[in-house]
Image 1 (cartoon, rainbow, N blue to C red):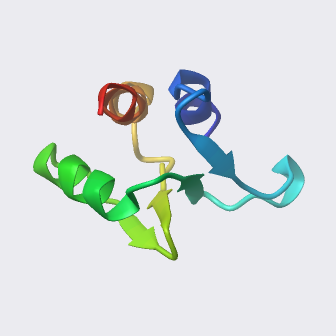
Image 2: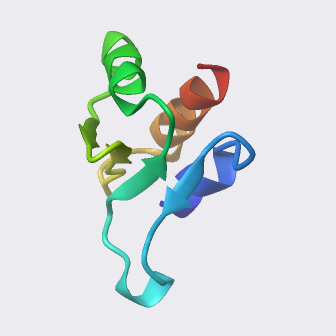
Amino acid sequence: QDVFLAALDRNRYRPVFAPEQVRSSIVSLAVADAKGLSRALLHENVICTERGGYLRIAPHFCNTDDEVERVAGLLNRL
């Protein structure tokens, strides 16, 4: 999560998460068009979900830093 959040354009996306000591692996982003972004990311072979108007991304320990940075980069360009 830290790698993803560091690479994400925080002027465009507002992460919503719990304090670090109780965080889960899911990152929820408050965005205007979560469904559209979810579809655009799926076209780039990125699996994420849209729930309640939030885009939910779950970087996992098996993802490399490069993969996580790629997703943040895609979002920064969309």
